[in-house]
Length: 247
Length: 270
Image (cartoon, rainbow over all chains, first blue to last red; front, side):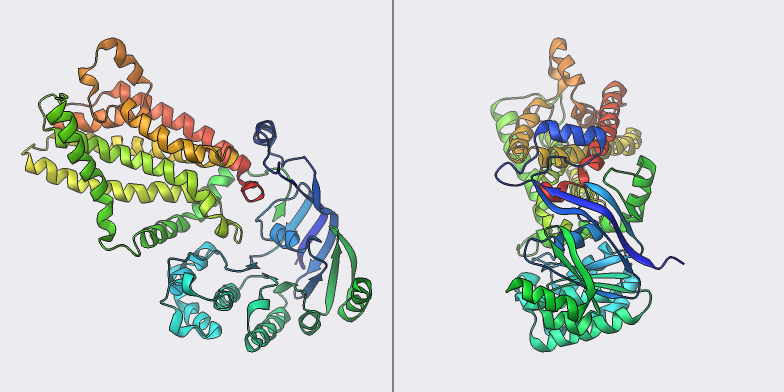
């Protein structure tokens, strides 16, 4: 059995920068004909990055703003695609890339749970089964029939997190979303993710600027800087060097 | 699963993947129908108010004031049948042009084959169209126009109409991503298109030299087809229908190809 969850092999991601971030018609035509991404490299979000993450781990990612942490997660989730290199993903990916989970504001919390579940490939019976768990974990019982547009940021994060975990992805991505939750919910989520990653089939990838959260959840950390892996190692040691470098 | 910079999938695996996500199309339809009328009072009635009121206005202007001929059939039936069809195509285009962009939030969070969005739009418009179809039968009954055996051609015409809508929706959605300006161009192209198509008039009344122009319009076959089978009780014009079908198929293959090629860069450029 392959025990690799995620493998990045010399992966680069380039973005346009500045006012002319729209590709020109000739760039579009080239993409349509060749099937390749836009080659204009004004900003390298990731620069030939390589790493392997094994199953059954909780891995943290730290780094300054704009270092490329979120881009890594978006590549894992197939939201965006690399310009160079290869990515291997084994298993179902779900998670929270920023707030909101793409909820439709007009619809109720309950309706959104069903939509989100079916996007992640669950059928109605399955969602019926996990729905009470989601409500219970999010503690939003009284709000499930209100439109999501009336939710607070914290409530939205609660619901999104709860849905993501109960679809039971093999690879759970969590990008800095706990920041808006209150202390008790954060604790609950951290505990859940910790237990979740103990299953040898589950992998948790956790981006956070909260060093204490990282310490609690992840035994190992990646430190990303300017689109490269600056360091990888035991959480305590990485945090120590990261701290002293940031001061 | 291996992710590479170039698109690896061929058309068959793309279609297989789309088939796996077929439930999502239904989910999106259900979501759009619920969200669309959520805070309105008459709700789903809006679906029929629009073509009905257009029919009333058109009947007044073109039949009563301008005396446009509808070849002996009541003008409201004559125009409603065409307006319902036109509304279906127009809604598909308009919504496809904007919905990829308005579903940005969702596309930014979760992977799914993006063509699910234009396809669900066509299906949503189809539901509206079928409701309008029921109204049409009521109109036929009011004017005592009987149903003849020619109605058996209806499934063929509907099928061509759906293919056409899928083709133009895929085309509109991907080209609008490439040229954002098109978002503003589609509405007035649709308006011009309505006058350029036999919606308020019939090609039967046109001189032969103008008729040629309508051969290249893929809407003609569909609209005139419905009129033939329901109003004139005759076999539809298969040349017009064949042109519509060929146009739709070619455009659909082309648009799907382009759509899949640029799909993975939507998020980077929206």
